[in-house]
Length: 231
Image (tube, rainbow, N blue to C red; front, side, top):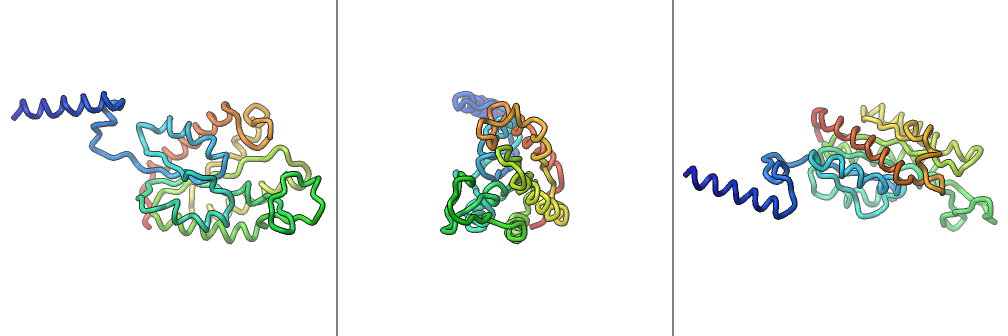
């Protein structure tokens, strides 16, 4: 009987090594917690670093698409959540909500060169309404939730620079009222944008994504230590 057990264990170790897995991961009796990251291209940029840092602790996933703005999120949230039992969800919407659109609802990339009237995609009031609905859907999963504040857009000037700050203020009120953890990526990145952001002054370079990934991984690990929520 002892010989059979030894043979079985040796076989599992051989399979693990062949598959390129460390034995501790391959033979773990406990499945890794499932973590979902929701967000726009900023989160797409830091997700690989988060996966690397949490490889031994969690199974980190994200939709195979840009999560865009809150209205898009409401249309896609059921598909993104799927049937998985998520242990933690780190999420953000904001930059796309502050885009300017023309009279036909098309995205205006150069606001200064636009000929006709423009309007912001979502006012702070519309953003709040959509965000509350999204948070309600996320709370229903029973996952530990972490909200990431929206990072600054340094290419904007004047009142437009404050659009992100206004939505972050709305989101902070919503999260505090729901007792949801906040990962303040805005304040974390703002003093370092000259070093961390790419030439478009919106997205982040390799150094920025590495630092963002470390911050996000820390916030997820902290969330996983908290008691699970009740769906």
